Length: 306
Ligand SMILES: NCc1[nH]cc(CCC(=O)O)c1CC(=O)O
Image (cartoon, rainbow, N blue to C red; front, side):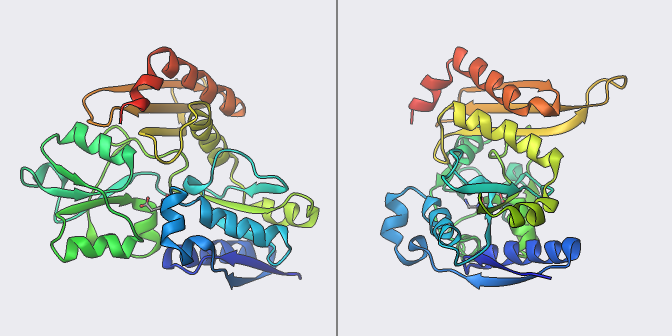
């Protein structure tokens, strides 16, 4: 059996996600996996992180270690992975997705928060949808890892915050959840809840081994979601949500891939929300088609208004 090295950031969320994938891989293939802690520029320099507008620095740091051969592969939150492919790197597996929904962390449900309550989130997608649901709220921008953010609720600085349910489950912080939003209430980010394994494109041995963790249904869903994002040329800083899953629309037809995407104005007063469905093998076309319809109906103007 080969020993594989898995490069990971050292944050609780990253270590947990990498550990889960390592276990699943050993279970499925018998290969042992060593976690190798990597410090990326994003971990060292807050200034750089702000300047680069988010998580790209973490992803790039791990990709450098893969390309140099220092580690065999890396695990990312798919949501944080830019839609543009990286030279020499293959997205070798997308395991079965965990819960894609957003969660409100606080004393209760959103509807129970007092008028003008302070709710923290750094994501424009969540800001816009929170404002659509509760225009009276004071939405406060926040940064930092999940525990730092949750600390602001515990301390009373904020009444509630919004985080991805999957992340909260992974790090064992479900006791702080007051409500999990349905995709109708808050459309998730493209790829939310899914993990992504990357390795060097020329390592055919790894493509075969790591490929066993790929879940075709999840890959189809997130491909549709991420194609919407790519065609809209939006990044993690755009008020864009997209969610796809396999569903039975008509009992005589078997499963189809249903996709919903939305662009929401910053103040939450206007939104474009469209759905489509198609064959899972045509996930990319489905995403393209929905993005085209969103553009037709004024998505570009909605995204520009900040
Ligand atoms: N941008 C940070 C990030 N990247 C992935 C997750 C959560 C886990 C996931 O979506 O798989 C989070 C935190 C959050 O949005 O609450």
